[in-house]
Amino acid sequence: MALQYVSTGTLVTIVVGAVIAVYYLYYMAAALQKSVRDRHLADDSRPDRYHYSLIGAVISVIASIVSIAVYGLGPWFLYWGPIVALLAAIAVAYSLREEAVS
Image (tube, rainbow, N blue to C red):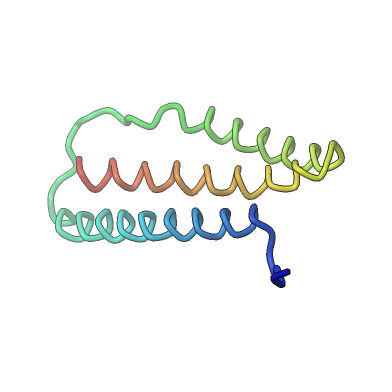
């Protein structure tokens, strides 16, 4: 029998987190490079596209509360917190991607 240091769920979370981190850093660098290139240009008069950011923040707080509360329901809910954290990183990476390509 092989010695198992981490569970399969933990290993999957680490691998998925590493993939998300690569994309996150890539789009962060792309957005920063675009910001540096465009820093001397005047702001355009386009309306703010992020008018739902308050709703997103409220959903994030509720998801955090739920992720803490569900720990008592069973051992499988132990992975809910990391899943919410990974989804939050995906949302930020998506926003950075939109900023970089627009």
